[in-house]
Length: 269
View 1 (cartoon, rainbow, N blue to C red):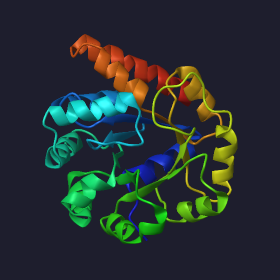
View 2: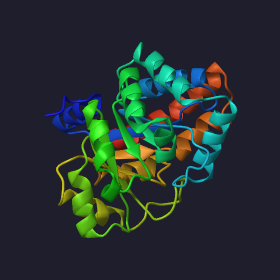
View 3: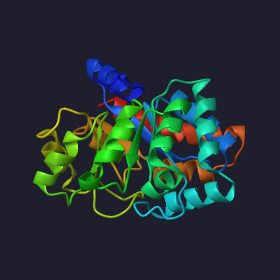
View 4: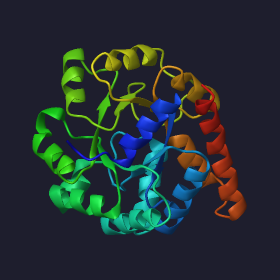
C-alpha cells in the first residue's frame, strides 16, 4: 500500500471535519518563480486546502485564454522544469500545503517520464494531474507515478462514457477531478446544468473525493459546487486576480482577500 500523501491526509481531515475542500490553481512561474513562492504562501494563509501548479507548457490544449497566457508569461520569464522544482522545494521549506502538478505529457516525456516523477517527488510535490494521458496508454506511466509515492489524479468529463468512467477511476488515487462542462478552462457565468448529475455518477464508481472544476469563479458558484462535490477547484479567476492586481504588498493582499472570500463560501456549506 502506498504511503499517504499530503493530499490523502488533507481529504481525510476534511471528511472527518465534515468540510468541503478548496483547491486553487495557479501557473508556476507566472509572473516569476519568486512570485510563485509568495503566492502559494498567500493562498495557504487565505485558507486554501490544496494548490494545483500548472507546469508551463507552450501548447496547453485544455486551457482557456487566461491560463494559456499565464503559461506564456511563465515561459517568457525563463521558467524551466528545474526552476519549477526548485520553486516547489523553496515552498516546502516554509509550508506543507498539499500541492500537485497540472501538466501535459510533452513536458514530462521530453525530459524522461520516470526522471520527471522522481525529481518532482524529491522537490516535495504530492501528485500529478496529466491532462493528456489516456487511460488506455497510461499503465507504464502510472507505475512511475506510484513508484515514487505520488498521487495519480484523473479527469472525468461530461462526455466520458460510463464504462470508461468506471475504468478511469480504478487507476486513480488522491481525488477525482470532475470537469464541469465541455470545453476549456475559464470563468463562466454559471455552472453547467449537468454538473450535479455528473458528480453523482462518478460517486457511484469510486469512494475517492470528487473535486469539481472548470468555469467556477465567484463565491456563489463555488458555494453551489460545494453543495454536491467534495471539493471545488478555482483557477482562471485566481490567475486573473493576481495578474491584474499590482505586484505590490497591497495588490497581493487584495488578490488573496478575493481567494479568502471564495474559500469562505465553500467552507460555510
